[in-house]
Amino acid sequence: MLADLEKNSLYYQCSSVTLSGVCRALADVYYAAVRAFGGSDETKRSSEDPLVLEYEEKLAVYNQLVEEARAQGLLPEGV
Image 1 (tube, helix red, strand yellow):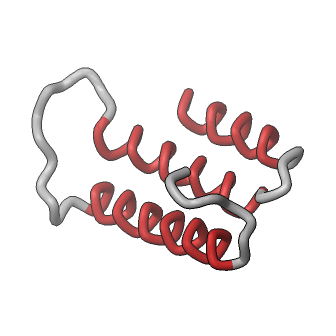
Image 2 (image 1 turned 135 degrees about the vertical axis):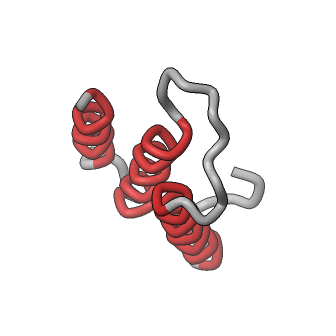
């Protein structure tokens, strides 16, 4: 699956940055979003769809890591 290759590529890119955990979490958000909302059909997924729930979980993890990095002074506000 192309999204799997993209995720691996993003993880590789994250290995060279200081906040690799935040970077990897963002890669997870991207991957989950592609799985939940990508595709050729234009049907809207239910908020109860497992793929949408996975996306929301990954987004929550990412947001938490960003807040922790900001609290530690590793990321400026508004980024």
